[in-house]
Length: 424
Image (cartoon, rainbow, N blue to C red; front, side, top):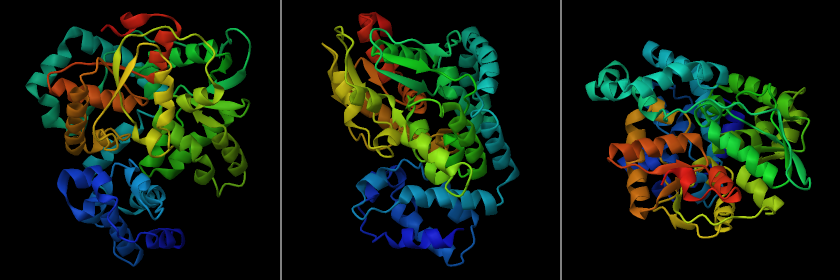
């Protein structure tokens, strides 16, 4: 472990406990070692020579990396950096079981690769449309085989036909900006309507939208799981794809958070460090960029009540809370209802709901109950993982709610589609 970097970061923690009520796993179980303060204590033990045994690693694995503790900490503890360094050390040093290694390889050989996800779409769509999915869930066969496989199957959203965006979408009206657009992995293949809506909104607001064909995974899933070198390689490819634009717009919270940290990820690479810093500096979340740009296109009335969900890597990691609400507030006749305990993670957290399905389900159920309590007609979220996680938890309650991205709500308003856009 990089003790020279970790020691001062660990020493920043004064053990005040302000992080405890914001930590999802501490809220669930009330265990000190499953709180940020407790995990920092374990990191200190490891720096002093304690080996990374299974009990210690389990507490690190149980962390969602939601960064709510970073927001709550009065001492400025960089827990995000601490857990990132620690997870990389775990992946380098800790011998996982054969079963755990196999599950992780399955996840990381599939989800960061849009073409592989695309190849899966056809069979998965047939599986859903045939009704076989309902039979599989009733029998519980996947649960007995692997909780991770069962979680993957439950979380998959209903799939419509695939959509392919052009490499360039022209601005409508006077040109205001040229922006690059990240299409992502899960977003691109499981939520193609979000990317289509994002491109239309940007174009209607006067932006030429460049969508590079050679883009792929941004590296977020790998970096957040401690797979540093894998994440760096994905980052290099993404940087190369977007160096020719002035702004990179991202519509998935986890991706935007990772891209803004490219400078730190590639700081020791003399060839890429400067390029990483340049791309990270011009990366903007969609809501962040649109608020900076200012509205121009006419907003048509959208008489719907929405519950807005704060994705952790948007609100905590990027500090973006007011901007999505400001965009929704621009839409006539739309009402936003706040969700109780907004800072507690829904349990998605990248691959967390696949690797820690039981804890994720508990958190998902809490979030679903709070969403249900708003009595809103539409759930709005800015991260594909959150959308899948909360929709799945609501189904467990026997409830259904329409789910949309902020881009889709804006798109419906700008195009005057009304409530029919969301099948309410």
